[in-house]
Length: 295
Image (cartoon, rainbow, N blue to C red; front, top):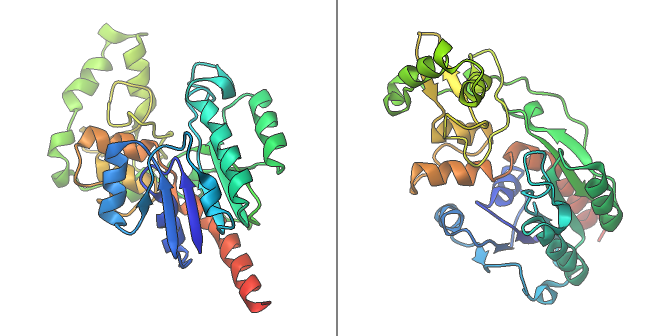
């Protein structure tokens, strides 16, 4: 199978294809973040890195089997600036549309944040020609992450897995550098009552039997409003580790190893929940096998 991935990030699409054992002959990646590219090259040196989607000649890939991508959501998400599809980042959606027209793939998959406005959702739906499928990553991981998927791949029904924070937590003896008990207790004190940082910290604390809120690209920063602080039940609080973040996105352990921790969190938070994409690709695999049998 020949694949084009726009806004490829750390090649979560390739991980998902591999997980479903879909054979890939060529995987063409368009990505501009150097740290994401470094992670991708470490894990998949065979991927062809092509840089920016802007002004790219997609016609050379006409007839490729699969086009995938998650166009930037900064101007679309509920946490964004509200500029919508014509914002500086989210306007790159139209590069995906251009690629779709020039490549004419057999299958396509577009992902974006489910918190976008109904107006932007309707515009994308009209252009893509298919209704989006809403999937929350909580059905496949320990993280709540609602995303919309526009695709012509038949999406099979699924059963929730019911994972919790306890399923992804590393042992405390691996986490001494992530012990933030003193800081958490400080911000939970009466001195910070009603202040934003106290609300952010409280919103992130989870015990082993709970699930995580959505990871953002700054999920390693305990003071912002994304990510996870784990209460291990021993009176100590720990910020999320890179491996725990990878597990929440159902990536292999240490997939992002080799770059600075903050950059690892950024790359992971910007990525896809691999098992969600792998589930969608179950329909791709079935359709692809049917085509082979009927030729």
